[in-house]
Image 1 (cartoon, chains in turn orange, purple):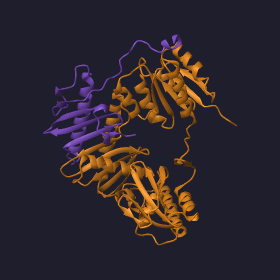
Image 2: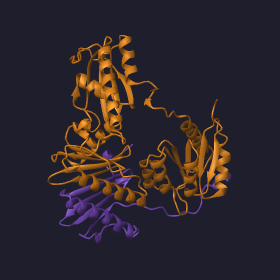
Image 3: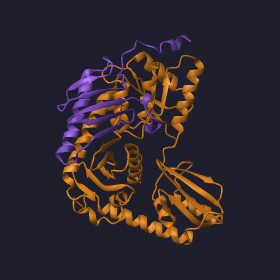
Image 4: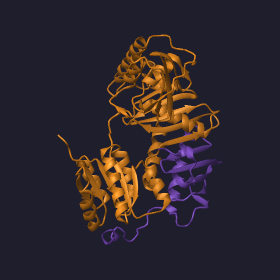
Length: 360
Length: 103
């Protein structure tokens, strides 16, 4: 059964809301339109019902659009968001896009602008949200590799997962090499296959590429599947109901934090949850550092809300003895210690990679 | 197009962020600033307090820091320790280098 997409329109002007409603209702997909006259009302509606798309003005009394969007992006990350405003200041456009908003549109002044706006909305409503690799949602990397090998193809499969990039070389249906983030061969292949989402592209084959993988693709895929199973088993053993505490992390195998701690340049890794349960690698007394990390992230998250600039992405601290980087990811505070030879920019880029691995 | 002319309405100011710097003493009090006077003073002080508390707490757990960089999707704060006080730099998206682009 085909479902109608639900759109929530937010503007403090009731006349404008009515005009928007009538116009957007005419979209070919026939979406269901609901309206809210304030940011607070919109948040209440989002809490009680599921929407596909939020369209909001920026200038509103009490809670303005930037405030609303910074909350919405944090609480409803799957919700598509559109800003429809008369504000033409480039700074606000940049800030809105930096918040992760899908579309910033200056209020249409002509029929053709309105037509373009409606086409953009229709496109946004139709965009798939399924996980997987773009272009082949619901297909895993294992499926892609199998397809290439079974069809006896020769190609280079290039996969991008956020800041991470990896390549897998296939020659005449055989896996010959893999490379990502300083790793090569089977190790790189297993790392890449841990990624759950991203983009991929097929590049021309490189027949002269030195071979580093000599196992059959079936054997390698089987080994990787077993390693992934063991990882998920260990991860579930380390869930909040498990036994791992400040001293229990060492039992967690070569997965999770251990995998992060093995990343290049990392000296220690610390993770603490909302219930203040602490796991760490490479630290003897992590409690005080965990407390500082949590309070710092809370402090600057609150500041971000005040400044309407969204949730804090990363905090980097540079010291004579230690460099650290903090971030909130997957409901955990993560603190990573970095070699003091690294620059601020290098730490930022490497931290992004570590967090992407963490999310995978 | 008459119908669409009602898409404009009187402006209500949004919080405009600015690039600039200010210095604070060891208690977080703002000493001097290059930010325009339109940037709310209480916000400058709030940023200063957050920076001071973070530096001080780090010092108290034997993690002395010389520099803090706080990255937001649309904003960056850089603070350098100056013998107890700090120099704080604010960067808005328009002054960002490409490496700060998050999308």
